[in-house]
Length: 460
Image 1 (cartoon, rainbow, N blue to C red):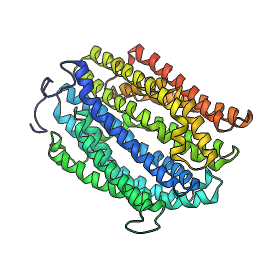
Image 2 (tube, helix red, strand yellow; image 1 turned 180 degrees about the vertical axis):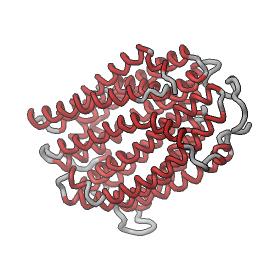
Image 3 (cartoon, helix red, strand yellow; image 1 turned 120 degrees about the vertical axis):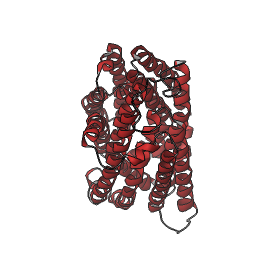
Image 4 (cartoon, rainbow, N blue to C red; image 1 turned 90 degrees about the vertical axis):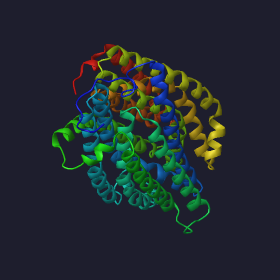
C-alpha cells in the first residue's frame, strides 16, 4: 500500500483497534506500553540513585536540572500528542495518505523544534538554576550537567515522534523495543561512568549526561530504521517539501498540551522555591527528586494506559465508533484505578525501606518516607485523571486537560503548599499534602468532563 492509495474502509486487519474485542484492543496496546513506561522511569531512578552516591547536592542538582529540561521537552511531547490524535484519527478512518502525511510533517517539525530547544536550553543553563536554588554548590553542579544534557533533545525529538506515530497506528511493540534499547544503554552508562569510572574517571554528573546523549542517539537511529521497515515507511518520502497546513494542525492540537505540561512544569519550579525556603532546604529538594522518581514507578504504568487509550479513542472516533471509544475510556480507567490502589498500599507500607535504599542522609530519608506515604493516598485519583486525560487527547480535545492542570496546580496546589509548608510551618510534609489534595480534585474534574461526552463531537 502506498501513501497515494484512495481512502479505504477500516477493518480489523488495517485498523485493529476499531474491530473485535475491546478488551483485546486494550491488551495489545497496554502491555508493551506498560513495560515501556516502567523502563523510562527506571532511567530516572538510576540517574538520581547514581547521583546520590556522590551526595545530596548532586541529587538535588539532577532533580532541578531535569525539571528545566522537562520544560523544554514538553514542546516536543506536545507535538507527539498532536501526532497521535491526527494519525490515529485518519488511520481509523481509512485515509492512509493523510495519516502518513501527518506523521511525516510531525517528524519535520520535531527535528527543527529539538534543535532550537537544545540551543535555548544550553543558553539557559548558565543562568536559570540560580532562580530556583540558593545553594551555590547545587547551582554549579546543575549548570555543568544541564549544559551537556541539552543536546539530548535533538535525538529525543525523533524518538518521541516516531513512537507516537507507531502507537497511533496500533503498534506498541516497536516503541517498546526502541525504549528498551535506550534504557539498557543509559543505565549501563550511568553505572559504568559513576560507579566504575569508565571510560574516564571522575566524570561525576557529566557521566550521566553523556550516557543519556549516547543512548538517545542510538535510539534515534533505531527509530528511523524501524520506520523504514514498517507501514509508516512511505512517510519518509513525504518529509520534503514541508506542508504548512498539516504542521499548523499538529501545532493547533499540540499547543494546549504544551501549555498543560508547562503549567505542571512551572508549578514544579514554584514548589522548588517553596521547598528551598523550608528548614534544611537541600535535603528537602533532594527528597522531592527521589520521591518523584519512586512514585514514577507507579504513575508511569498509568501513563502507559493513558497512551494506549489515546490511540484506541482516536482510531474509533475516526471509524465513527463513538460508543466504543467511550467504553474504552472507562474500561482502561478502571484498570488503572485498580492497579494504583494496590500499588499505593504497597508503597505506603514500604515507604521507609525504599527511602533508606535510595538515600544516605537521615533527614532526606525522613522527608522521602513522608512524601511516599502521603502521596500514596492520591494514587487512585491520579489514575482517574491521567487516563481520562489520555482519552481527551486521543479525541483531539487537548484544552480540557490543560485547564484542569492549570486549575489544580496553580489555583489549588501551590497556594495550599505555601500556606501549609511556610505559614503553618509544616515544612515539606505540608507541600506533600497540597500535592495529594490537588490530585484528588484533578481526578474528579476529569471524570465529570468525560461523562459529558462533549469531547466526542470535536472535528479535527
